[in-house]
Structure formats: C-alpha cells, structure tokens
Amino acid sequence: MKSKKRLHVVKVVLRVISILLMVSGTVLFILALTISGQVEEGKGKADKAQKNVNTARQITSSSSYTKDIGEAATDPIQQKINAGRRDIKKYGQLVQVFYIVAICTVGTGVPLFIISFFPRRKRK
Image 1 (cartoon, rainbow, N blue to C red):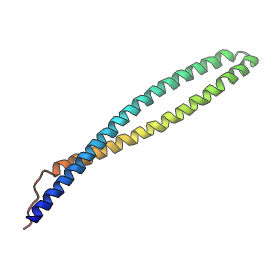
Image 2 (image 1 turned 90 degrees about the vertical axis):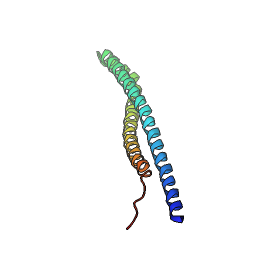
Image 3 (image 1 turned 90 degrees about the horizontal axis):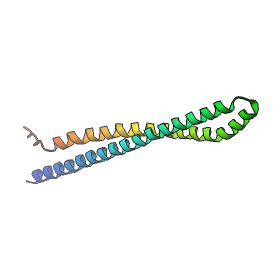
Image 4 (image 1 turned 180 degrees about the vertical axis):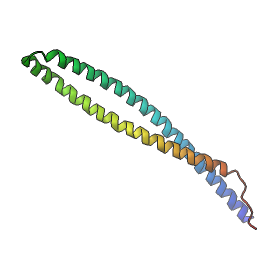
C-alpha cells in the first residue's frame, strides 16, 4: 500500500512539474513574439531615420560650408541611430534565445505530462 501511495505522489508531482514547464515555455514564447514585434518596429524606425539622415547629408554636401553644417546637424542623430541598431541587434539575439528555451521547455514538459499517465511496469 505504501508504495502505491508513494507512486501516486510521484506521478502528481511529475504532472505538476510538467504543467509548470509547459506554462512557462508558453509564456516565454509569447514574450519572445512580443519582443520580436517591437524589434521589427525598431528596425523600421531606424531604417527611416537613416534614410532621412542620408538625404540631409546628400543635400548639404554640395559645398564645404554646407557640408560642415550638415555633418554637425546629422552626427548626433547618426550616433543615436547606431546605438538603436546595437540595441535592436541585442534584443534580436535575446528573442532567439527565448524561442530556443521556450521550445525546449515545452518539449520537455509535454512528454513528462504524457509519461505521468502511464502505469508503472511491475518488476519480475
């Protein structure tokens, strides 16, 4: 009797752990999707800003006087764009890690959940 009760407790604990793994993996996957959307939005904004800076530099590059003014005006903006692109790259890598961890977590939780319903084989 005692071993049956212990086996039942082990199966319940296994089910709880597997459910926690599946839920945490799903939450992580949703978080990765959200961050991925924001990364794509940031890429679009950075590309648009870079296009504007390139246009301003092209317009002001006609003479050495206007070129200096154009560079003075666009250099701080270019630095912000570069910093934004670095952040975009960092968060893009984080999203990839989140996807991998989410898939592994759910991929571990589902088999554990299924295994917890199979009866234990009796030893001979």
